[in-house]
Amino acid sequence: MDKVSMPSNFIKSIISGDVRSGQTPQVVTRFPPEPNGYLHIGHAKSLCLNFELAAEFGGRTNLRFDDTNPLKEDEEYVRAIEEDVRWLGFEWASLCFASDYFEEMYERARLLIQKGKAYVCDLSAERIRETRGTLTVPGQESPFRNRGVEENLELFTHMKRGEYADGAKVLRAKIDMASPNLNMRDPVLYRIAHAVHHRTGDAWCVYPMYDYAHPLGDAIEGVTHSLCTIEFEDHRPLYDWVVRECEMPNRPRQYEFAPLNLPNTVTSKRKLKQLVSERVVDGWDDPRLPTLSGLRRRGYTPEAIRNFERAIGVSKSNSIVDERMLEHFVREDLKLKAPRTMAVLRPLRVVVINYPEGQMEWLEAENNSENPDLGTRTVKFSRVIYIEQDDFMDNPPPKYFRLYPGNEVRLKHAYFIRCEEVVRDADGRVAELLCTYDPETKSGSGFSGRKVKGTIHWVSADDAAPAEFRLYEPLVRDGATDESDSMLTRINPNSLEIVQGFVESSMKSAKPYDKFQFFRHGYFSADPKLTTPDRLVFNRVVSLKSSFGV
Ligand code: ATP
Ligand code: MG
Image (tube, rainbow, N blue to C red):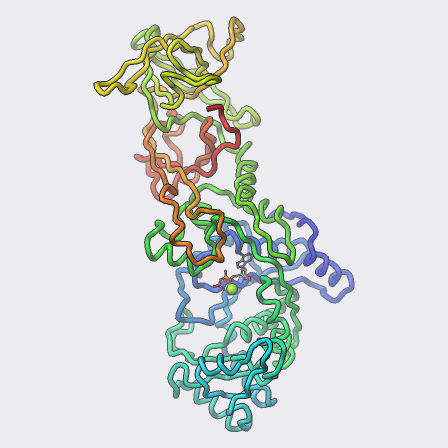
């Protein structure tokens, strides 16, 4: 990973203070996904924060799977998450699983029981909820709250041995049913689930709850700064309680930051899962999804995502980031990296009638006018070419500088052509254009006889490669954020448009993920699943910012 300096933020200041005071000799952070879905652009914020901050202070970061809910988790997600983290450019110090600590967590729970700090409760989940009270009403103590230590130890052992049905009993912390913080009202630490875990199989049928497992995982790994999103702020007293009462030698501290929210972007795992399972999209890596695998397939680069995350900053207050910022960063990243080539998405045939039949020539074209290091290529010019359908108009409005009957334009890297005649089909639609070219006007020849206002792109008909282009709009619309539940009613029916056109022959051998700036169309990336040696499929990553006339 490149060493980068993260712009200052309140968490960086805290860490920096702890390092300077000697309280934290080595910074240790962790990224703790639950393997119940794929990572998305919001997770990337947490990833960047954890990995980049630790690296900046010479520390390390673990990748820890919070695999405490076997009913929702799967090995597929573990593999996908590892791939995404690596792709973003992060190397974890240790690969950890909360399930690796089940034995220790269980022993620490017994310690809590022995200290009179935990008890087995027979109330149903519903009853526990009902007796929890509200912000204004204190909770009611469970009738099982005052069970003796011996009885609790025995019942907990029976729970572990699988002698009770799911939901029959739980282990609860004994804290304070009147606490103003609802999380402290005897929270559940363990529940029974007779389920096969993707790593521990059927070894366990009691599973620790997040609020118990997370602080212990952090403490076991020696995490110094445990960063999480703001909704866990009210859980911090419980986090500290667990670390303290379980007598963990290490004392990690939890800090909360605001999650990333983007309008018109689905980042709830539950909703993403729904989109995938109801086949609204083509899998977790559909290029319309904000998952890291979707963004990767679309053509986003790790650099663009990391620069974006760095730029949006870290604070405690929720704010919605404009999704166009992410687009800005991918344009910035690809601007100098991607060759600028020509693709015709909706072809219109043009015959250059004064260019001799059978003749052809190779014209020199620079690959990136702002980056000479990308060198040059040649493009073939011949009598029949394709241009973009909307680069011609029969009756143009004022200030339309592209082709119309009698008008002259520049063909990028080639000659001026003038539209002499429009050939129509039986229905009166434009079928092809007959044009003339002026050999004097060859690009790079220094011709200065006259000027034209429009430059259009083209490909030679006998040399171009057929290609499919996939153009995207937001999957959901109306500026709504992820909070609202009406997401599936806001699906944009035009989120994917597929068109068939041509690319210049230099792109015939494009490989998955190869990126180009198609003149006037934007940045495109070869689709990794659909591109084969015989088929070219390009995803539009993002359009060009410049609006081009009409
Ligand atoms: P859920 O808990 O509902 O399954 P989640 O998105 O919180 O979903 P986790 O796997 O728990 O998923 O997330 C891993 C880490 O990423 C957590 O530390 C979480 O706080 C952080 N994270 C999740 N969503 C965002 C977001 N939108 N912005 C920043 N960080 C996030
Ligand atoms: Mg979570």
